[in-house]
Length: 176
Image (cartoon, rainbow, N blue to C red; front, side, top):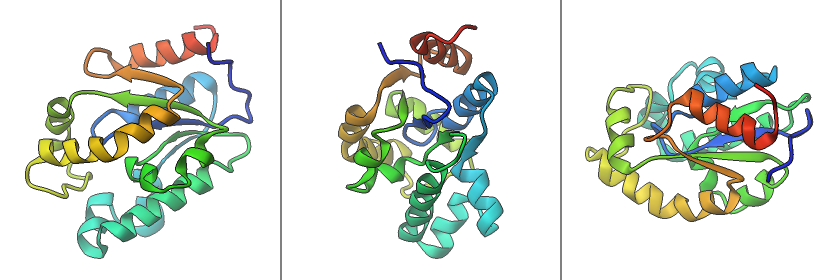
């Protein structure tokens, strides 16, 4: 069983787009009385644009570099935050080592479920017209890294965000 994180242990919520990272991270942060960091609103505040707008205007490489910088900065918060991390951060070879001291929670669901959720989110970049195919490619590239870095994994097609949070808290031995 994963030991309870100290206040010095960042909690990083990862998953492909549409997995519910923001919702789960917000709920976890509230329950653990920590700050919540989320690349979407944090970057919107810093750069004045959504991830989709940055990808369209500046290209995916700039967006992904900014998402990476957000994760790097967020991991240095004191006390440690609960971080909703963009999936693109896992494309960096140094990501597994950087995430090693964190508690990593992977939110997963079938591509068709995530594609349906993505269709309703204009803030998310649609790198391809066929969202399901796009997610399948991202899963093929990022899935092995997600599996390697994740301390806890939840099927978010089968569990509501509150159930995921209860599962994380239970695994940590943190009382409801």
